[in-house]
Image 1 (spheres, rainbow, N blue to C red):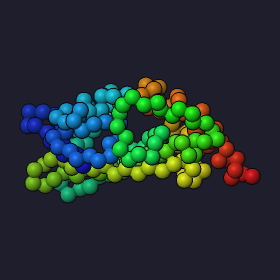
Image 2 (cartoon, rainbow, N blue to C red):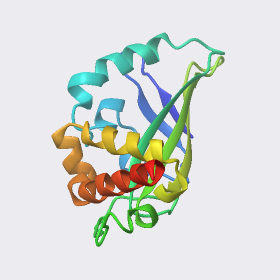
Image 3 (tube, rainbow, N blue to C red):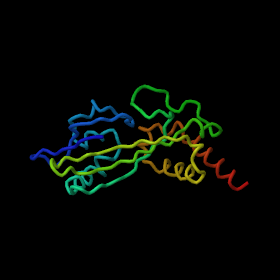
Image 4 (cartoon, rainbow, N blue to C red):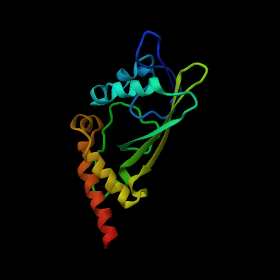
Length: 179
């Protein structure tokens, strides 16, 4: 969980406290004290397309209301703790083994304003499943969604290293349904 506050002289929220057991490609120590836009700086398009709207949403969040959203990634490990670092991403993934070697990582996120302090509590629940555990139509949707990710973000996530294998795997799963 993360605690976000806004200083009276600022129009944005910053991270002031956190206990995050299973981050996705970030470290709490690197983000502590940063405004949301700076926290999300590695994400291509965040500053230009999302930062203003997110800050506006946070400012209007009412105490007692609970808002949820989901986020997803394709990762190369079932580890819940997915820290950034030097790793060989997606080495050896093929259409034949992608169901075992690629994992859908989903974050269920919630936001709520705390009534007494006005701070915002942000929670992150992480779920990881191998692609072979997903229904074929979900794998196909995932392959299509990954292809729609903008180029800069595709590069950041290492998508080029596994996309052909993911598409091939999705095609195989679809063919199995029609046989």
